[in-house]
Length: 564
Image (cartoon, rainbow, N blue to C red; front, side):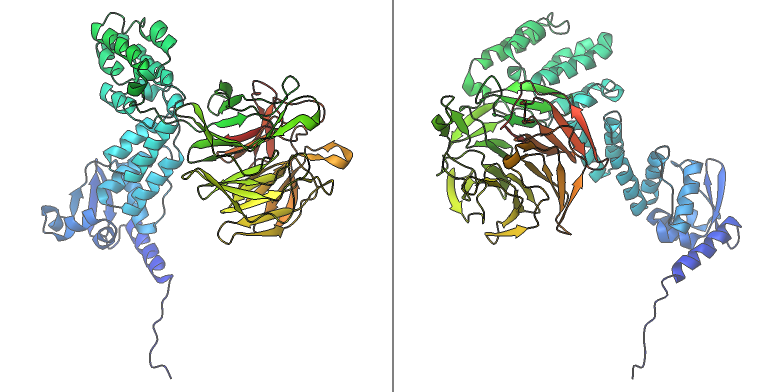
């Protein structure tokens, strides 16, 4: 028999505080009056001391206020003090855009750490290009370390948008220079940093002209395009009459001609962009060209060409580098003259250069490529005779390919994605069986095992596969027996392990490029059964809605895409 037992009445404290709150509102049993800007608030010392280290010290450490019935609190508005007192008694408060800064100030003064953190998280969720500089300065002033760090990263990542806001134009000279010195500004070229600095100077040219030389010293002039340096910077109204500025520009032009000096200059951070490579269209059987999509401006830009032109290429990004794997080249109109590729090359968006890497052991096109755990996987594909189940793994550190366990089925033109550290491969065509597959396999890199999962509703090849949250999406594709091209989208729930059909794309697409960014899915180019496409559309899973973005510069099918 148990002699004793401990009981907990979880509602006891809440009921007690509810009664004390009523007593405060009725000014009963109160033993302290808080005076804020002439407003009087009756309260109970023991409640205030329990929540606020600042007030506890005031009441218990023998300070002058400890023996008084009324104490003055400075640095808080009366309306804010009323909210803070309510919070201390009820543990509830309404934080809004209008009051959050005042509440955080008051919470910081009184030592209400949990409330201060809630305000900081609220401000984090409200960061925009137009307010992030002000929030960053506010967080720095009140030592909100996490908020300050998040706001700073937001400024870096959205610098192009931030540089057009009123807060940016009102920065002090030192604050602007602090930004210009950072390696982390997300820009596609140093030209954009220069333009932002000039906009700041133009906002108040009379008083800021004297700062122009100091501003220019923090632009990485040697990273500017040479025509831009000679035709824009050198002739700028802010720098053309300053001998020191002219000297800086001349030195930058000389540095551009010295590769060893140029390599010592640290480039800015590159903003995430979609890169689409290779493919074919009605004019060219294989493309070496690459395009980059800028999420901020909704524009496509032509970038450096691959070393090898190819269609039916696979691509993925590892550690900020873009890899192009396999593919094929048509040596003549006769399909028997197709050259299947084993070559791999890698693009560095900072250096803006392609570098050749080690070849795969098997030449193949329509290879599915995925990146997980710092490795690159080349899965399936085909050559002239057969489709492959072969899987090779590339280690960027050693520049070597090794074979890993093969899939259970042969597949070319399959979709591939990574979800929760596992590789999923769906669909694809088997040349031996002359059939498209509906099945999906999952590879666990830890156990090195392939397992079948639930099949898609429609068998197809040339589909695009991506993962977002715990869902896997399968877009478009072609069913060869009937030459049918799909706008169909199916979604696989990795928790329930079931497929469902969701909103279709706006047109059929096979062999399109696909990428995910900011919880949205981008599908670019492809073939609709009649035309190779240059248009692109984006899917918003929250809205279950497709919208077009700006079209690529040229049509592409058999291309590959990745975010870098």
